[in-house]
Length: 449
Image (cartoon, helix red, strand yellow):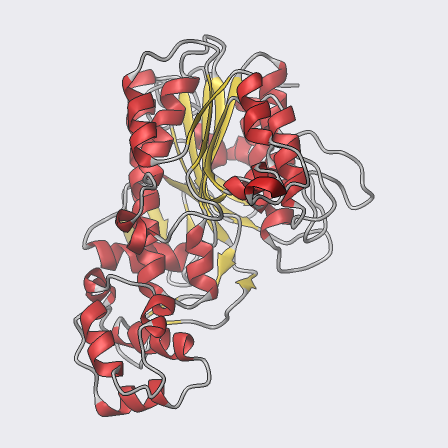
């Protein structure tokens, strides 16, 4: 056994902090009771920042540590693990998982904010609003995507993003930052709404609207006051992968997170903020290791913003927990005992983008791959890509093999997920849980009914 940061890591790969699996929260004996500024049971919680790295699991964490070359900011705040099944499947999707993590209730895959029988489920965000707290949603997907939608809307089908956008504008959410502008615009302006102009409606309801990095920075520099509302839609669809973000006018996830906190902290009653690193999941579906690690890195920068605020504030609980694993990523492949994820630091494009740069004859494979990865391909690797039916997947496979990273799926898996927490009452998350336990623990920390 390896003991580090007060956390016991068992050789089975399961990780626990302070408790064995199946132990109750009340039985926990915290090594650090806390004083409101660190990890512990004590201290008043006024704000919660719930950070969701979509598709992330303990093997992503392991590979990211090698990629980064040192521990991640969340490593010393590990509390426990939790299960993720939905009401109708052992393997959840983001809608059912998001609903469970927002409401404490299971639902069927594809459903948002409703029970299996169609009953409306109140979310932790909505409960927070009822006691006067401000609220916000931040994502690198469309802001109408499954995870952010699960905290403030109620629809039978996660794909009905036009209805989700209507409900978001009609909700009490104060800050909305992400992609998906087309879902807020009428067809006459190239949008997906038949006739509604939801951006104009948002302005009428008091929202300031920004749509690029510069406008967000300008907003950050003006004086924020209690009651301010902010809508930021930085792309017609989802934001770009982190590997390509600098080529756009889109802000970083950390910048959006900081801005959301700056707006919401003005509320004397406190706030609830959900932040999603959405595209870790998409990278997992594509088995694109470099995309995955670079988006984990962008998510870590956002977590650092949240923890830095929590340290200064003393009354903020930061919770980091993914909705499910995607791709069944493994730490180590090719029968190698050496981990090599650090080579991904040199990769500057997604596999999909590299595939788009390869000519019809596939005669420039080695040049394209070397340009965007720094790898000099071996002849067998060139042939693997040249003969592939799915050239994107072939490129991602070659790059993953170079990084000694394996994949077992292109879909979600049923893997247990780690939960990390920092701030007052963070030790409530110690132990082995189900995803439905997380919002209940937050509710108790906030003393909500």
